[in-house]
Image 1: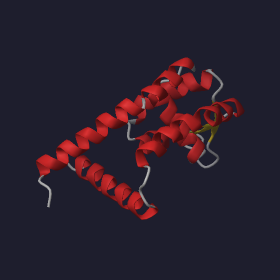
Image 2: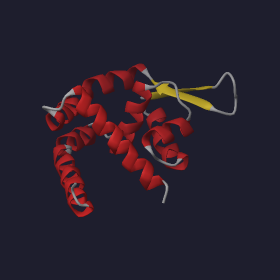
Image 3: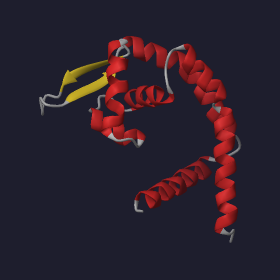
Image 4: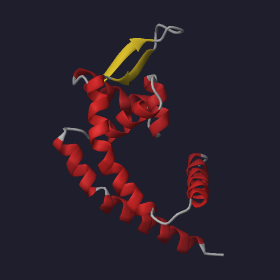
Length: 144
């Protein structure tokens, strides 16, 4: 069984590899005046629309107060739309606008190519196990 020291170094190396791989993505985001947080919000809304601000924050592991301003900016730019929740009029549901959907569709292949390169050779079962293990590590970190 690997030592925790060895696992820490593996996780650190994976993190560094991922950071290096996303430099292309970061440049692409800059060209479109988007931050990584903006992209995470857009991706979340593409994958699971509509969502409240709190739902978006939960999906990307942030506090609701940390996504309030980026959501507002994306709204002003016309990339997302909002409408009151039919069940709770105090809550706005957020979803991609047609412009936001088009932008995500345009940028997505670059992001998917980077991810595919990092995950190349892993079977579907291995990917499921990797996801399960990473979720467990995240859950453990939240219990501190």
